[in-house]
Image (spheres, helix red, strand yellow):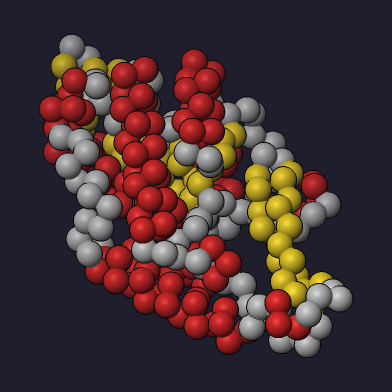
Amino acid sequence: MAASLCRMLSWRTFKNHKWMTPCCSEILATYNVKSFGSAVNIQRCQSSGLNTQQAVSPSEVYTKASENLSTFEAAIQHEDYFGLKNLVTLQDLFQARVHLGHNVGLRHESMSPYIYGTRQGVDIIDLEQTLPLLHDALNFCAHIVYRGGMILFLCRNMQFLPKVEQTAREVKEYSHCRPWLRGTFTNSANMFNSLPIYPELCIFLNTQDTVFETHRGVVEASKLLVPTIGIVDTNVDCANLIAYPIPGNDDSPASLQLFLDLFKTAIIRAKEKRKEDGIDETAS
């Protein structure tokens, strides 16, 4: 677990490192560009008449980036760096009805290993399997945020749209709860005539676009190796495309609220830890 987490986090971290070419009369200009519900930081060297003493030294950026990497590596080695394992228990999952699946007739064979049994024709999800998978997903989410990654919440259930968008706003992240345009990820350069910027993590509160169709974002994210976390109910046929699947009820307001609260807490704790450890935004 630690090794795979380290490889994935390292890949996402190095992808976002920003290195600067030394210029005697240039400074680093950072622009916040907002388009299609995403915010990206684009850095470039821009000629300036300012004193060269105000310019950022490339060696300083390199040194700070190295310090940040050392901090990141130390955080990975910690079993529960953000204190997330005590956030939720089996009792909490049970009370939120996370164990309730769909009718037996809707079961997808890929979800059979996560099913404890049936009750009155309804599949019952094994919460003893759900809990450790949920802990792993929360931990991964926190590490992504800790490294300055961008999180995208996705949900196609219109009943939960306000809650999902509100949660994303509260943690200063992003959400996409509308119909997914084909090629939003895989053909974004042609669709929007701009350099594609992808989130570091997609969190799917439900992985179905319709009852019988997988969310297109799941497929496109898997093609581009964008890490994903997804709540997978017993009728889901795309669990193998999700990097961190969480077997659970994706239809109950109580269960969805629990998941939103957990991810919200994980993100907030990661950002607080980032500040406590003094990680420089310009070098991470």
